[in-house]
Length: 109
Ligand SMILES: [Zn+2]
Image (tube, rainbow, N blue to C red; front, top):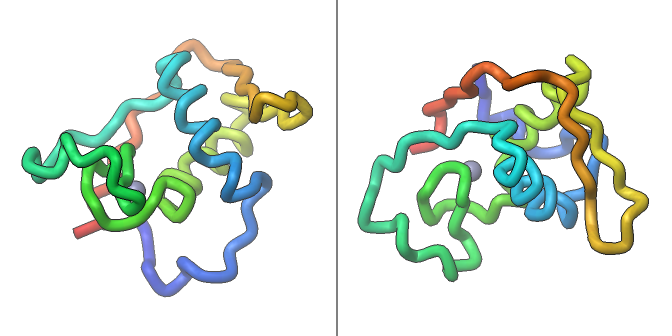
């Protein structure tokens, strides 16, 4: 489903700087389910700037995680969530669905 060649130049209806806040919000309301950690040795290295909390690996920061961004975009398109960016504290997520289906993507190495 995910083609790495389309990584650059995609437009998302949110800013990269908002991704961490969006991730935190989605986790807080349990709107997303994380992947299973594949490399447990890296799970604890959460201070690494290239640690992706969605993929549990040190590969890319969450703001560059286009798999996660695609999930957000799809959820927004389906009306499952709304992202309110007016808050000075960061984005606020409204969840419209009871619970989303599991989003699995193994495209990252
Ligand atoms: Zn990622």
